[in-house]
Image (cartoon, rainbow, N blue to C red; front, side, top):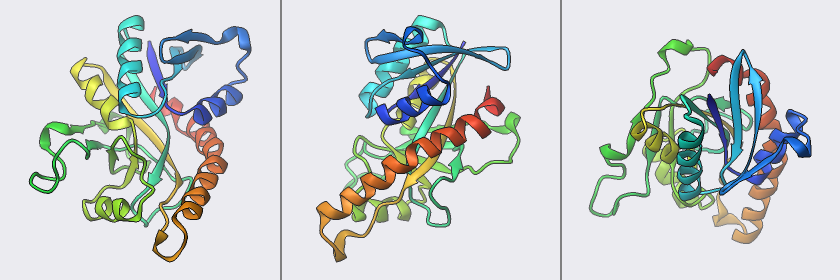
Length: 223
């Protein structure tokens, strides 16, 4: 069975709508809820974990153990870091890193032990790839955005690299499919509260568009 890991309630609501899920098809588990689908003759379990690394890891470990998953596909939104790209661009990263696991003042920004390389060779190359950076805080501050950009991070989120890490520990294949919902904005020339609220509004507007694009154009390729 293949697991489709979804973090936020807005991503999950968009997923429920895309697949026209009825109330009776939804089941609760300790981290949220899940539903089942068949696609390309494969049995899929879609589940919402909640946000941040602890929920992402906990929810996925639970599902890996309960359903004996052979693959996890992390589907959802992300912040754009590389400004060569735009909102709604979809990525399948070949490297996942956790960047909040060091004392960056005296250690490397990213330790080798928190890097997961993802082999995508059997899936072709007709998709955007790059490095996804994960931390327990969303990228909303301009200084964080600049730091990630300086370290060649392509996109950023709050769960995926930690999920890839735990999948590696379980010897389960992990594929990350993420779409840019928003970019951080330079708050130095405006009110930080207003700037952050604008970014959230952009995120909320783009989230269903990203999820629809992932499910409509990418998911089947990676099952």
